[in-house]
Image (cartoon, rainbow, N blue to C red; front, side, top):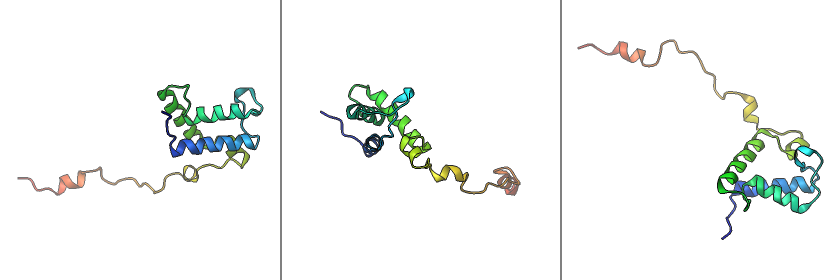
Length: 115
């Protein structure tokens, strides 16, 4: 029975096929762009972790790697559209951290009565 794709896997396949249709899908380290539709499908399934030729462990690893690449904005689609990245990573910490005047638990120890 065929494996059902998750939503993240479907989105990855969709993105890769979009890159192919716009002539942006790279051909690996050799450079150039993918011309064959069948090759684009094979790349999409491999990157999405849905390949029937890879082990389940390898599929999970390739999906993790692809999703990390998408979060960093290192896809061909992101480069073509101006390298969009997650805004949260540029902002830094969401709240200001201040130095503590007393170590944790110190105020609790001093206020307790001794018996």
